[in-house]
Length: 83
Image (cartoon, rainbow, N blue to C red):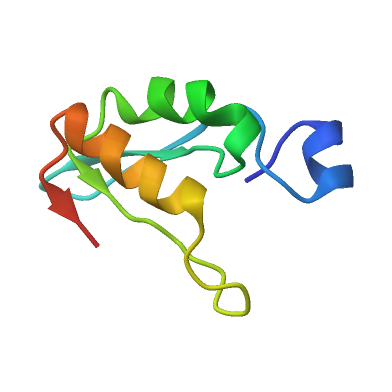
C-alpha cells in the first residue's frame, strides 16, 4: 500500500494511505498508517477516524516501544476494538 517512492525505497510507511471497499451490507475504509517512531503524528492522524485497529508486529523483531506508543495513542483516541 506504500504509494510514495520514498516509502518504497525505505520499506516503511511514511504517510497515511486509504483504501476503500464495500460489501452488500457495509462500506469499509482501511487506513495504512506508519509504524515508525518518527511518523507517529501521521499514525495519529490516520487513527483518529478509526473504529477498529489492527496492530501488525514484526515476528522477527517482536514488540517495540513504538508499538506500545501506538496502542496508547489509539486508546486515547477512543478506539475500543483491537485485533
